[in-house]
Amino acid sequence: MAQLLYGVVCTAVLAVLTSAKPTGSEEMAVELRMPEVQPKLHDTYLCVPMQAGKKASYITGFLPHANSSTAHHMLIYGCAVPFKTDQIWNCGEMASKNSDVEQGPVCTEGAKILYAWAMDATSLHLPKDVAFKVGGNSEINWVVLQVHYKDVHLFLPPYNQKDHSGVTMLVTETPKPKRAGVYLLATDGEVAPNAVTYMEAACSYEQPMTIHPFAYRTHAHDHGEVVSGYRVRNGQWTELGRKSPKLPEMFYNVTHAGITILPGDILAARCTMVNHENRTVAIGSTVKDEMCNFYLMYWVDGEDIMDENYCVSPGPPSWYWSDVHAIHAENVPADASVVPGTTEVIKATGAKVVVENDLDQVKDEFIQLLENFRDRVEAGGNPEPEPRDEEPENFNYYHYP
Ligand SMILES: *[C@@H]1O[C@H](CO)[C@@H](O)[C@H](O)[C@H]1NC(C)=O
Ligand SMILES: *[C@@H]1O[C@H](CO)[C@@H](O)[C@H](O)[C@H]1NC(C)=O
Ligand SMILES: *[C@@H]1O[C@H](CO)[C@@H](O)[C@H](O)[C@H]1NC(C)=O
Image 1 (cartoon, rainbow, N blue to C red):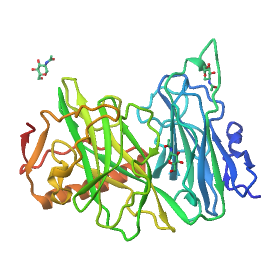
Image 2: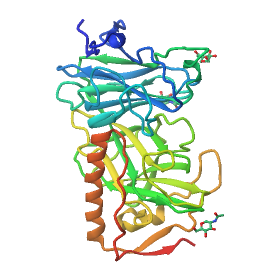
Image 3: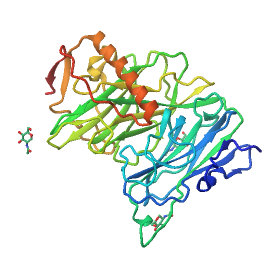
Image 4: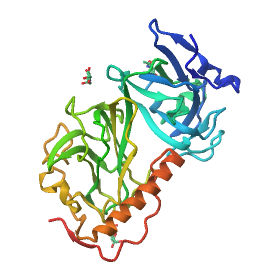
């Protein structure tokens, strides 16, 4: 049987990528692994690319090979164009500069997260008949493995170990009737000093096909206590997922199996940020900055996944759920800011809320942000917002009680 994903063979170290073994059925096991690397600095992020075929192939599952004592997390990205096609590179969100390999983004065009592994995660099998389409006309021409090496002491003397962490993908050339996609809700904005701040995003879904969310992943930096995501239908809020981003940041099952998103529904997410520092923390790419991300993995019947991959709001202090009447913010579930397994509601303090808005201006700002955000993600692989402009003058604020 023909190989479905083509390994990069330009250098000897990458030859390991080409090993594809039939698994018995028509599905093949395709390995994407680090080529015996020895990262020397803590918090090194390394990326290794694999080309998808001219003919489309379909990924139905991911089996991780990693040890959480060395790999902090692994992500599989789909790229239209990766930063490198023939060697590994340093692809950190917070990349350390003095590394011996070139530094750059995961993708230089068209980045999508397909799989996430972190401590304790087992394999991910997509639901029956569901697959990520790669290669062909899918806009995913390359699959890239990113490994975050948090602790590298085993790669230094006296151990001098080498690492080949990676993922086995279950791949077939037989088209699957249902196609998987990932949608990302995120915010820009900032977290006030010595305060609890809600970072909120919401977007309406307007395409004709039914979306079937089945898994979600949260991502924030140190100040994130809980990230929650919702479907809002006719003012009724239903939880998609809620998780502490301090837990392993992998994909988890949605709260309600079988939930659907229909045209006219609103997708919403909130990150509850607790800041004990005496400084404002802005959304950004370094470890000192914050991020507020809720990823939703879904399937659709047929070929057409969502046109838009992102929903991004200006975030605090200029935008909150309460700015959108259609969202019925009065119906936000009481546990939206409760860490699962606890009962305490983490209430926003000192955060600012817009009470008077020029709706056209907000809409323009949304569209502009979305465009910038999409350009950045497509260009960089990481949703890193740019520095914010001055706040519009006609925004008035008051403080939460
Ligand atoms: C993970 O690595 C640690 C440290 O080298 C080792 O003790 C442990 O056995 C490894 N676990 C697995 C599952 O390989
Ligand atoms: C997630 O959902 C799948 C499909 O419904 C189910 O088989 C699996 O056991 C669930 N996993 C967990 C951890 O609940
Ligand atoms: C916190 O910052 C404010 C404003 O810059 C300053 O007046 C205050 O002294 C700072 N407090 C601490 C404990 O550093």
